[in-house]
Length: 399
Ligand code: MF3
Ligand code: CO
Ligand code: CO
Image (cartoon, rainbow, N blue to C red):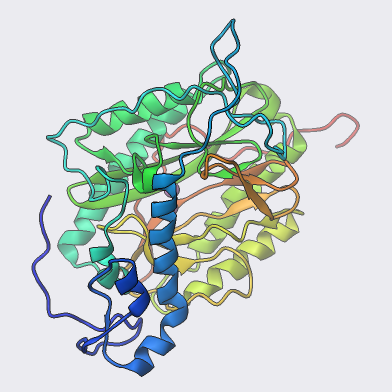
């Protein structure tokens, strides 16, 4: 993995181009982060609200590290499977099916991101991570390549979706497809995430952990694939219908197709000058027109040599996201759309996020490059990509 050349230390302020002074963020210092410099007290104060979210990320990593969730129920004598959180108030019918398979290995010869060993995205990157990056031609090519590979891997995984396969088997497929492409599966050990892909079923909004759960006819499943290849991350996801029963259920089709269309509507706006806060307005408008709600807790993000970096891309209306599209920026839009309430509840595994009412939710994600004239969808579907839009089922008695 190539190291970046040393640069003159810059102020962390979002819209500030000054060189850094000697003022360091005291909270960062107390967390052991040694390169959080600002040009002035004024700039530090102005940027406090966005900057302080970086502290939370570090604290979360530390939390994950020391408080491994307790596994308390007994394995089924027949199968050896068990629910690790038997006393948790699950919001819907889905349950975790443990044990998780052992951690999968990535050959040393494949370049690893900086969190691969200890699970912690490095704070040394906080400085760069506070600015919206504009990629040069070479970096843009790097993003094109990893995003094309990520699309290949998602399509391979999607082709395996059928009743009877476990989400862990899908994880194995994703993991091996990444390695065959000389790529590291970015989720693996990112903030201690234990697997190589997120598999989010039915009421799971995002960050589902692949386990021994078998896919059932009537389920929907989101596969969220991210690859790290030659120094860049490429991130995309789609939601798929499992079997014919899912495609025959009007509510299921309504939420999946609404999510797909919300992403399409937002992408239509991408061009230089569009404010990042605009996407949420069209997404929420479209979701509401389909009688669906927009998840507020999880957002799209900048992505390049860092998995998650500015800008933040909220998917809800009237948000206060900072910044505008400029040629050379790469970021994701990834709306999560729910049939019922937008509120979320996280399982005790500290990852799996579900709807509070247990109703279904769907998501689609692309990594995008802002060009001089508009947008390049770096993770675009190919003519033979599995999945794709369907029409609402014709219900008995209705035309
Ligand atoms: N791919 C997800 C996203 O769209 C992030 C997954 S992080 C993980 O941003 F750790 F859960 F893998
Ligand atoms: Co993703
Ligand atoms: Co993403």
